[in-house]
Amino acid sequence: MTGSPLSLAVAFQAGPIAVTEPVLVTWGIMLLLAGGSWLLTRRLTLHPSRAQSVLELVVQAIEAQIADVMRAEPASYLPLIGTLFLFILTANWSSLIPGIEPPTAHLETDAALALIVFVAVFWFGIGSRGLRGYLATFAEPSFLMIPLNVVETITRTFSLVVRLFGNVMSGVFVVGIVLSLVGLLVPVPLMALDLLTGAVQAYIFSVLAMVFIGGAVAPKEPNA
Amino acid sequence: MHLDWSTLALQTINVLVLVWLLRRFLFRPIVDIVAARRAAVEKTLADAAAAMAGLDARAADLAGREQAAQADATRIRAAAHEAAKADRDTLLQQAATDAAQARAEAEAATARARIAMQRDLERQAGELAVAVAMRLLQRIPAEAATGAFVAALEDMLTGLPDEQRAGLAEPGAELEVASAAALTPQARAHIAGRLQAVFGYAPALRFTVDPALIAGIELRGPHCTVRNTWRADLDRIAADLHLDSTHVEPALA
Image (cartoon, rainbow over all chains, first blue to last red; front, side, top):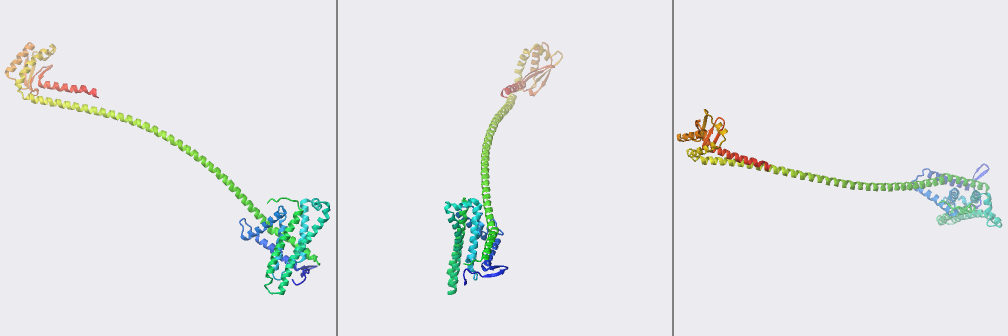
């Protein structure tokens, strides 16, 4: 990344809408994840292959994490949380491909993810408690906490954006700067560190989403 | 800070579409297959438990059948033992009866054989005695022995009842006087005189010789015969011996 992290390169123009590079990379990630999932889940059997076993391991690990963090049945939250984790992880690790900038290194993608979490908190909270019940949670433990709770709901969403954007963008910038200053192999350790950072950030974003949504829904012990 | 709202909108839509895509092609199939496997495992476990329960019931049933079979075997063995014992007793009793009967028959057969042998021996002894007596008597001259018989003949005629004596000789009828050896004229005259004294008249006499008489005189009338010979005596002795053995036989049989 040589330009400003806040600037977006337009890939092509689709009528009035400018399709930027992060959108283009996101489409590639979507194609990879959805296409790969379709290919791997076409012939699922009761006696799993090695690839099916890996897929089941990943999905069941996400389910277990949801059940542990949210203390709720994970079936309703698995598509959202699982997609967030897999997308952020894949997007963060897409920086390994030369010439590709992770979509999560741009503010718009992180803001989109945080916006989805923000809406999901309301969606699942109202679905679980009802509108009145959910709004009542803002008055806990007292009415005096309503302003603070409202501010917290907004600011924690911004914190999601800033945390993910800052970590990924900084990693990409560091690698880019080092690569422009020294030899070809010097940034490799930093890239490995960037992989670890990307995985940790995907995990943190998903866990925080689970915490926010879990705080909004009525507490319920999971069956499994 | 500049924010590209169109990119934000597109990314939001992209993530939402990706949520739907992964839900459709990844999470739901995986969750379904895991649930199916869990259900299959539970069904297998339930089937195994049911099969185990069935096997337990089958084992209990087989154990019951085995006990019943053992009880039947014991009962059949006892019945067979009792039947064999009864058959053995019956056979032993039958064998004892048969043995007693066979022994009795053997003893009877032995007794009969002994009696027959004894009778045969007695007969042979009688014949031997008669033969011995005949050979001994043949050594005595017939003329010497006949004299004693003439005297005895007179006594025999005297001792006969009148009817028999009268039936021996009739007037006008011929009386045969048989002897073992030819009589001398003196002896014939003596006999004629003695017969005349007995009958009161002189019967017509015809003297014959019969060596089979051994010794003595035999009077052969038309109606009866007076035998006063050794042959007659020996025949009588032999008859007596035969009669004695005949009388013994029923007592031994």
